[in-house]
Length: 279
Image (cartoon, rainbow, N blue to C red; front, side, top):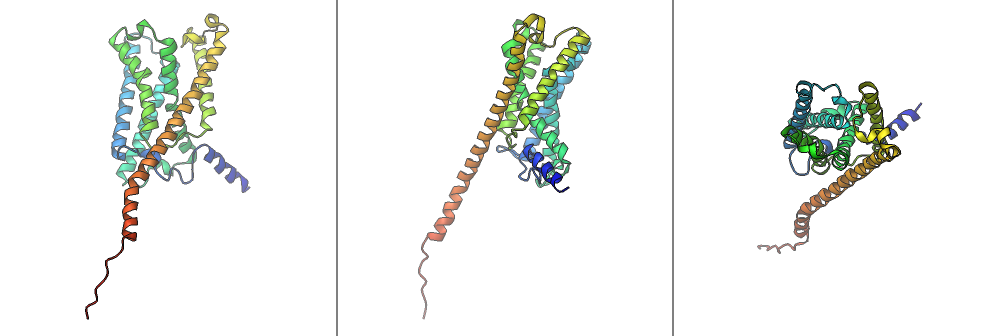
């Protein structure tokens, strides 16, 4: 009976969910700005991403009369993930700033919700990188910038999405994603293949041309494996940048504290002036 809680705690620890959760408030702080400023930036970026999603969806429905397949594209799904994370993280950061930088609601929520927040972080710091690389390497073409709308959408969803990811990786204090998140991210990416082929079965088209087995033949397996490898590389890059940022910020904090330590050492070691006794 007593081993179940211990094994559960160990599993959550491997998944990045510490007890107590985020004691140093890394998820709601930044090495370059205050929590209030970070909250405003996150909510502003989330609002812009939400506007892009809604405008694109409405455009497809009203202008092109083709909104039924909007949620079949991995680009759109991953971009919606950015919206979800930036609003969730922004609200948590705002609560932390308004509560005197002492705590934020997620710290008191149940562990499954804390884990899902961390896993969402792992996806929004890796999937956008994969989307950007695959789009510009395989899918972009002369029509990418045909109209102002096409140019704006493609820049927002296939370039700025990676900027969103890099912002969270390099300019917040969020800890590097746990290694156990990597197979989960790859698994969820593999599950998207089901969405792509269900879309073909129900609507008669492939969301991405390289998923067409008749067109690609033996190359299809190579493309699928390549996408998985791209996710692994994106995870390694995101984690490596986060580790580097943690080391640099710690080194910077130590260098800032060093002069104070030297001053204190000088005060202790400086010989005191002799006292004069008056008779």
